[in-house]
Amino acid sequence: MSDAFQLEPVRRGRREEALLFLAAGRRRDLQVAIRAEAFGEMLARGGFRGRLWQARRGADLVAAAMVVPSAGRVGLAFHSPAESPGVEAAALSAAIRSAADEALADGLAFVQSLIGHRQHADGRAFVEAGFIRLAELAYMRRDLADAVEPPGVPGLEWRSCQPMDPAELGRVILGTYERSLDCPALAALRGTDDVLESHKASGIWRPDFWWIARLRGAPAGCVLVNDSSSSAGDMDLVYMGALAAFRGLGLGRAMVRHACLQAQGGRKEFMNVVVDAANLYACKIYEAEGFRVTHRRTAYIRRRYSESEKI
Image (cartoon, rainbow, N blue to C red; front, side, top):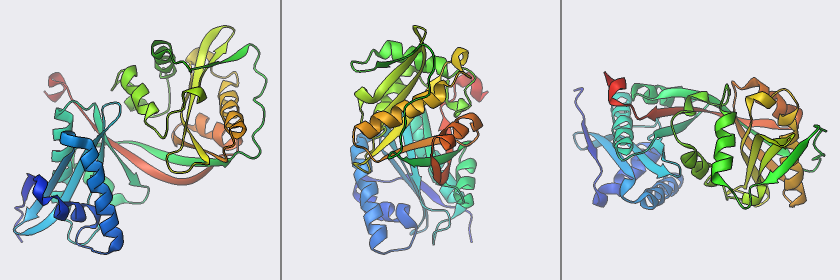
C-alpha cells in the first residue's frame, strides 16, 4: 500500500462525511450519528474559526480532526479514535497537526485534547502531531450531604467576587501560580484576562460563588465555583489556589470546606473537581475532604511558538 495520502481542509458542503468519520472512523450506528451531529453543532458555534481537516487515500477517508475555539483563547481538539476501523495512524497525526496549527495561526494560545486514561494509541497520535503531554488529570466528586464548617484559621475572611474586580482577582490568581504543582506548564501561556474567561466558561458562571480568601487583611488565595452544565444538582470547583507565602496554614482545606458548605446551603448535592494527579498536596486535601476519583484523563497541548523558539 502506498504511503501517500491527501490532507485537506473540509469544505462546508462536504462536512457530513468527515464528521461521521471523526466520530468513529468507518463504523456506523445511531450513536455514531448522534456524536457526529454534536460535532457539527460545535463546529457551527465555532464559526469561521472552527477547523475541520481530513486525510484521504484515494476515495477513502483515513483520518479526520477538528479544533473548535473556546473561551480564553483555547482550542479544543477532537479526532477520529485511533483504533476505529479505517483510521490510519500517520494520517491521523497529520490531520491533528494541520487543524491545530491553523487554529493557532488564528490567535489561540494553545490547543488541548483530553484522552481517556488507557487510550494509548490516541495519545501517541497527539505526540506525533507535536503535542506535549501536559498532565494526568483526576476527576473527583463528593457528596455534599455531610459538608462541615471550615477549620479555624486565625484572621481568615472571605471576600465575594460579586461584583468582581478583574484586576484584583487576576493578581491573586497570578500569585497562586508561583511554585504551583497544578499543570505548571500552562502558567505562562496566557494573560489573566484569558484565564478568567476560561474559568467563567467552565460550566455556568456563578460570581456569587467566587471568593478571595484574605488572611490578616491580605489576599491569600481564591476559590472559584460554578454551576455544573451537566447536572442541576452539581457544582464544579473550577479553580483553587493559595499564594506561596500562605501555604501550610490550612488554607487549602478551609477553602474546600467553605465552597462545599456554601454549595450545600444552595441546595446542591455534589461537588466536582479536576486536579493534576501530580499535585499530591492538592490530591491529599481533596481526598481528606471526601472527594473520590471517578475517572482519569490525560491532557495534551500544542502551543504557539515564537520565531526565536522555532530556530
